[in-house]
Length: 446
Image 1 (cartoon, rainbow, N blue to C red):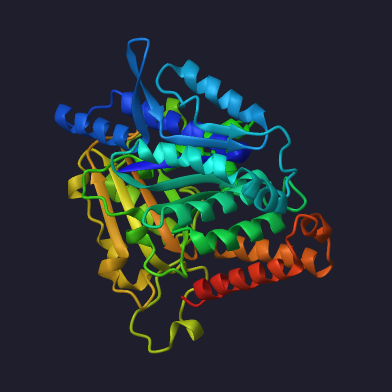
Image 2 (cartoon, rainbow, N blue to C red; image 1 turned 30 degrees about the vertical axis):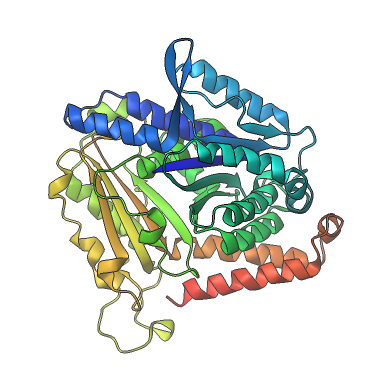
């Protein structure tokens, strides 16, 4: 199955570029651990998923299945030329759309003005990419929530994708802004983005800037962290999920979203460390699995600083979960989890601890709630690595924070006029608050 990536706004285009880079360097990596035949089928599956072939000057260079959209030209032109210079892959020169004026960090401008105005051109580009696929699985959009283009135009384009491709999956990759904030209205933009994506998307895969920043500082040991460092960590985590595995891969959404009320997916990946430390490190599967499971139940963002005191609740208590007094503080209840193992000896790994019914909400059969994908092919220089995609209470606190901060501003009518002048009324804000309060409430009572 092929996936068409739609890169929206500055953040979406920069991360999208790093994702294709990570995938390409993984494919060209010489880390064996699997047979030549297995490696070849891995290559083919990866190429079909993310690239189409194009002859250029006698050599076939993979062309990313991607559409690049931004309201200012600078980032897209940089992205196109860096990719072309890499010599490993490139973007299609005709698959991008940009304007000169930007969206001024205003969601309403992206959604109500740029969206409708440029809908036809953007959707034509998407249609052309989709037609290049022999088997189109769906769309992967990459966007930030804080600004105007990625968030506002991103939400608009997602609705258009849903209308144009009703049977294809849409996975929105969303970058959660720094808590301290880059943009004064980022909580409004985030509120409006999330509530609109919730209506048209199949799932929202979220990365928090604050978390990735910590990973760069504490695990990758980077002294002065740039956006590129942050984006490379995000790209590595996404690659660890989206690169092919040999188990019959179910659709990611089918596996993880059993109910349309619950669409928020978090991602954890271990180990993560600077490349120069890898030769001196050894990992055992039981150790990795133990850490990953504790990261899940204690809602730890990375493998350092996990709270090992958190334990699953004792089963068999007759009190309904919403009033449960025996549910341990900070315990993170799951709806569904997917673990992806890559590297040697992964066939013998015992994943029974992830099948423990006490990790999951009571209304789902734990057998259906947990899935594992495995491949002997190592990923990006890590001899063994494990990724966890989780539909759980991971994002409850950040979501509550964003809605709370947005409400405080809304209550004093701060900056509302910036939105109403583009046709987003107070009523629209209230609808968005209601929608997200409902999501928060649903996740809280798991």
